Image (cartoon, rainbow, N blue to C red; front, side, top):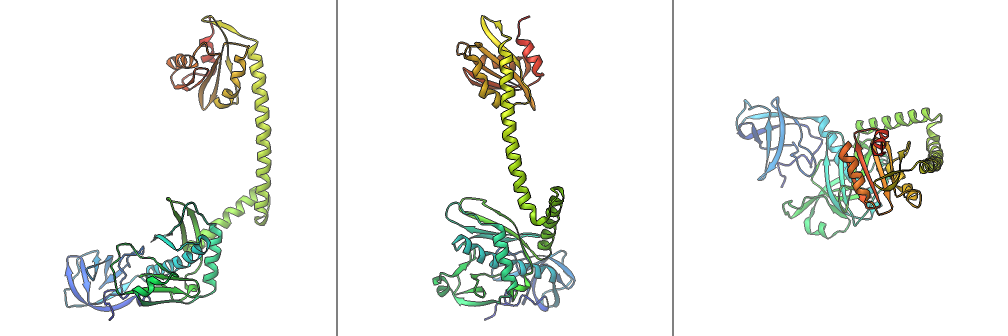
Length: 397
């Protein structure tokens, strides 16, 4: 027997109908029959009007579909009303929901799993989650290519009722249903010919070619055992492709090449950049070594210990820390180098007789910031003074 409160999935192309009002409670209206789709299964509620009054929400509960209006209606129970469903939004939902079966079919081929982790149709993007075992991922361009091939192939889409036990026994059927879905003797099946078979209660198009273009926007791992695919259909997908092409053209122009050669040009530049980075690191090491050699010739005595203190340019605290210990091997008992990496920092190395943390503490007490480390090697940062001032404060008058 046909459920007059849930006609949208059976006849998704109906967007205009007349119906008798069964009940009115403030802004909530129940009709004798309705083609409005109530929110559920990841698909948003239909939009539209009842006798010209905007429908702002549609929910299903206790076997009835409740239409919530923007304002209290002028009609009463027993009246006949003209219902109009927003055709543009309904069509978008049909395309987006059918596309989820297309994308899911591609994903489970690539991931080798039938796990279903969730689904949601947003205003400009659709989210589909796959349950997987451990770490898993897929190439977004591969899913996009497979999905658009299915669209181009114009595969028929069918929906029908099946005995629930029979459906549950079939390994090829994916149950895209919530865990709290009510038990029933039959289950509604949506099938894309030779591609995907799923239990689903949403609205769909009759042929994959009605979906239009599909653009995969992102593939991520939002949690353990989940792979999330976000995609767009229709105009949003076209806009994404245009923006991608525009960015590729801009990049190609900047790199003085063509879009077709963009990847090879980028790879060449990356190799050049890596080579330059290696050369820079070597030169930095040489400059730091030369600076340390020069500083070692200008020692001074402080608190009975032999010190080397000076400034360094163009290197960060970690690079300094890797080399500063060399000067404590004979050149001095304490070495302090100050530099700037966003803010002023100090690196202190000692022979162990003096605690490097005490010296960092002395500096930060005077100039702010903080730091610490090991007794023979410590760092401080965030100092409120230039490196030259910090070094000058440590030299005897």
